[in-house]
Image (cartoon, rainbow, N blue to C red; front, side):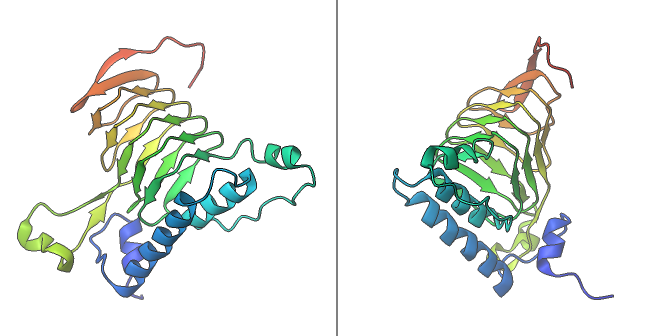
Length: 212
């Protein structure tokens, strides 16, 4: 059996080397894609914004044929995620956003492991999602010469993540949850609950007609 690549180790949450040539190249590809997205003028049509976001996430899904009417063409992308620049993403291919997700400006995705966000979830500005981490033992950590690792982050549908929230590796946030601004989420949050604080704690259950 072939030895797993560093990328395969990374995706499985195992220790991996982040500074091999292929991993450096993967981050560079994403960095350049983010720079193109962040430096785009406000007059760029929705089609181009969606195309550039797919470049960031390395999504090869073809766009629908262009319609001659600009408004009608924009309407084809009304269910695509809406991302406000600037944004910072590490690899891109591990970020999956559902339909109608809104990500406000200055958000950061450290997508060492998969980061999935359900449909219609809203992010305030300066939200940071950190799926990557490092060994605690400094002898093993060893700066850029040592290994890294990660755990996936999952955020359900219809959530509201307030501004300046930090979500740490391995956290799952359930459907319809709200995370108060400035919170640091270190543990799972159940569906339809409000959590806030550092570390974030469950404050109350949300009364809703929505079902899980």
